[in-house]
Image 1 (tube, rainbow, N blue to C red):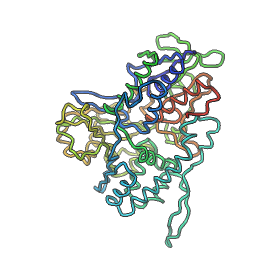
Image 2: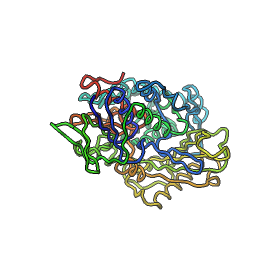
Image 3: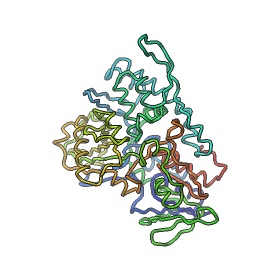
Image 4: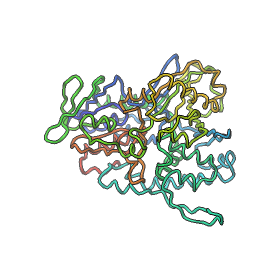
Length: 504
């Protein structure tokens, strides 16, 4: 079978490599860094362990399918996973807090008790409309290659809703165009609005511009849950890497690819920084659009998601790893969202160049994992916040001041946080750029329908025959699950060719 060169060792690239090797291809992965996993990294120090990239897995069925299709051992035979229940605790700017269980009925009851009577059903109705979006877009958006028929995804599948409005409170039918319109017209309590817009913010989307179809995001989280991988998500990356080795995928680390080799109008290999070339029948690139362009494999210009974000480059993340003295209290929740006091100002800063905020929205992860702390008398806590990539994050004072603000916010979720801290390490978009090569350290979000196609990512095929794009910057977008889906799509396109119609 033909030799295949894969650029980068991120999750999507490795997922494609494992599938292609299983199909009989000789696969070589060229990674410019010294390890695998892309943005899926970890920090270990003094017996503490932290995820510095994504901390939770959604839609684990994507990786279950990968392991079923590429070997004998199932995913759960390789890594342990635990579904979060409670799913999340929300701490609002007014001081109220609500803990949501994993069940739909439990969410309704918790919101009725913790927010306002009727809030639970109002949220449930919203999530049900997210299901409408999911049913309409699941196959073409996630399981099929992005082809010339992509314009079918330009229309927003979010359904029209009947609401009461005006002085006479008459019923009228509205068709929301953006997530902000959904919040304003269909959610009465402002705390429900914060829950909705936080979903968009957490994926790097501006609520003012994100299509109404983004309501699918809370639907996915509530319906399919969030899963913690024992040992952290780095353990998932290791499992995929080892599956690649089992399938005899070759990895070459410290091998930066600087260009493409072409012959007869198609990709025919890669050129390395040492001046050498490696021939290949197909090239799979797990890099950002800007990096792909630099290799000579794409037309210039921002991706649709970058245009929709109002800047070239998606938002990034600041991650604060906290080593704490004192054990985790018995009723601690794994994931807490502490909502910022000024969501509109925060979104303006992240997406539209506004002033920096001193009370950001912070996600607090407190895994109950004995393997990530020295003993029961200590705790490893990870904080994360979405930030613009345009700030000078390489400066210690810039990163330090923002980390201080994140810690202040997180005190609402972790009792006695300030007095318990032994040490902390801060990771910024500057670190993400250094580790992954993404310009500015941006983190791509998942593809969304609607908005005229502005939230679709670059397709898996390119203008250069034989060159394929894989990973979070490519269809169907960012996130661990979506990256795994892209690997399945690219492998299908290479193995089955033009007849490939999508994952089964």
